[in-house]
Length: 130
Image (cartoon, rainbow, N blue to C red):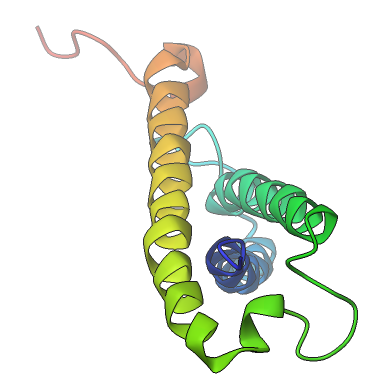
């Protein structure tokens, strides 16, 4: 019914955060640090791509099945007050699960990127001091 609204909500929030972080990185001239291969704005751009892309596909699927329409109240579940409860439950359980899963996969991907980065990219000296 409306499970795509939860990822859209996270995507809006992370897009705002990404824009603020990009502005600060430009202000201070930060691209990457010794500890990180990717800047935080680049990391958030990847997360936003996952969230916006998945949300658009889900919205298209809901439009295709007639659950979302181009006239108010836009969600067919909101026409009948009895359907609002199940819709909110789906948004919380299914949408919330998708948000958690996508964010977890993004975090694992960022961890793998950092762990697989060559030492020269990280400017790390191994066996320093003995």
